[in-house]
Image 1 (cartoon, rainbow, N blue to C red):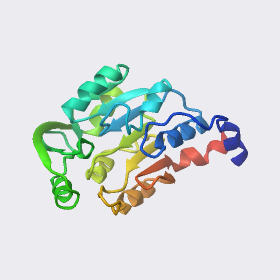
Image 2: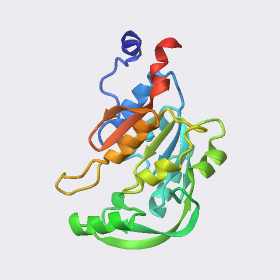
Image 3: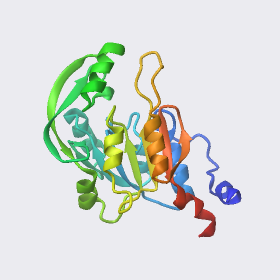
Length: 232
């Protein structure tokens, strides 16, 4: 298997990255090894269409998918700059809801549906709640049944406090993406954010292995898919 991975390594060492810590390069490597081109992705809490974005490199490589972004400003920009993608001005959770409070923070990359997380950032991170909007919330099943009838390869998740609720809402027996990239570090001004060990343990229980961790994000790969590489 090691020889196979070496064969798949790109000879180029200075390629573009749009993620915070090169997560998109790691994800691209995984899909190159798995021989999956033009990935189908679900980007939850995508924020900017390019900056600090975990799926834009996949988009440039010919992939496409759905970006879920409850902030109307960013959703409008995504639709303009990524016309091949679908952008839903909504949130995601275990059940469909209407008029759910969405907290728009001073630092708009930190907007969240979690009141607890919003109040924590105000108390600990010199943040402030600039506005509260009422946003529709969809379920993963609703999005997958509408937009991913041919399958889903990759999920990027950055939701400031709702990670577990969203992950638990995925029916991983019926729809099993090969790769998840999940923000597993809470925000803190001084860099003392806490790691979401519960998320990591949950994904391991679902038979996803930790392929890489950039401190901010953890990249999970379907264990059976990866371990069966040498047998295909």
